[in-house]
Length: 162
Image (cartoon, rainbow, N blue to C red; front, side, top):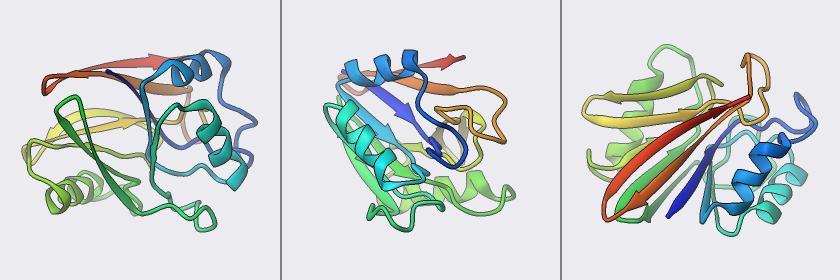
């Protein structure tokens, strides 16, 4: 199963659209996971149109879109806990790891956004993934996303950048 991991689209306040090559990856993915900051109901609607199956959470710029703060989904034997990671840069990894451990166990993978910085690390025994900003919205210096191949409990992650 191919999973597109994206976050921080910020359309229309900081970007006009998702880059075409990333749209293509999103459209062919079996599942899309968006870690928040769509920035508008129309951006969320666009992702719902692109994605065959969407798991999404609200970011700090999404009070009007009606999404939960956290979502948990099992894909290919891997549990993903999705949260935006809202708050100060200080303690970011602690907050996201704590969210994962509240919703699941240390074998789960945390997917978050907020910082617009790519992250693939293990913190407090929990793997954390931040795909950066899918549109390259400031303060990102480039557009990024991740894809994850999941099967039988294994996870392989690839970073894509423009």
